[in-house]
View 1 (cartoon, rainbow, N blue to C red):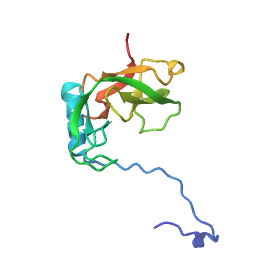
View 2 (view 1 turned 30 degrees about the vertical axis):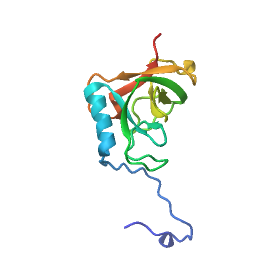
View 3 (view 1 turned 90 degrees about the horizontal axis):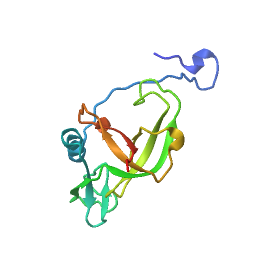
View 4 (view 1 turned 60 degrees about the horizontal axis):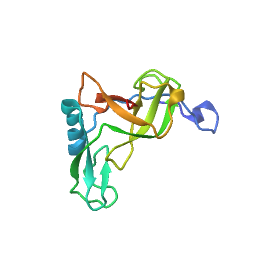
Length: 158
């Protein structure tokens, strides 16, 4: 039982700052399950294409968010694309970051996709990052069937 503000003799709101860590399991659905399975088993990045809208979604969708078509086709995408934008994370938040700061996160538009794909950037100094550079996926050797089976995107080698 918490302490009520009346018991403290004031009429203001009692605030108790805290951080709640709540573990959970979510269902990836048909599209997410296939996406993660292809990453793990084949090092392949797949999206879904809406024929009426002619848009290719990554991560893949089961339903087109624009026209609500449910008959999306699977398309294999390139593991290379263009960095649309990025940010450099320089602060530490315990327990929720994929790696120790500083690190860079970017939005990558893979060749063949219509939408951007958020992911980690690596093998480049933060001061050398710029929108428009070409990047390529680096896959983890020990893949587990999750988002970080793509370890990061690095600048594309000529």
